[in-house]
Image (cartoon, rainbow, N blue to C red):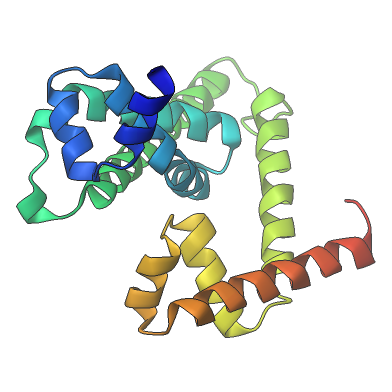
Length: 196
């Protein structure tokens, strides 16, 4: 019985799921989460740079959707856009908070005579994040402009294939072909260069 109910919920529109969220329907929340978690994670990670921080951002954003579903106004946009706007806002809040924390750390270090650029765990995390970002940029550089654009929209901005087709005004089949060819090219580049 639970499988049938879950399947029925998956068939509902985002607007219908959000209406059920107003009544605190946990199954509707789960269906909404499953539908949009990948896009939310991709956007958050693109902004904050690390998977761990992106997880925190997404958890906060989906919690906001749970609490604030009643505020969703379909006349102002679709549910996916609303969610991604929340994700973006939470991610930028985190970056601002990090900036303030870093400023405070520098001030504290200066007050006790430590150099603000000393090696620590946060420096190591930042270095790893930079390496990951450089690797992704290097892989994107092997793509044609058309392939890079659809892959950026799909994986970094969280667009669906349909949304990319509408946004770029190209056929859906072209979107899928560019993504498939681009990913194959990136895979080839990784295999040619070997690990790390």
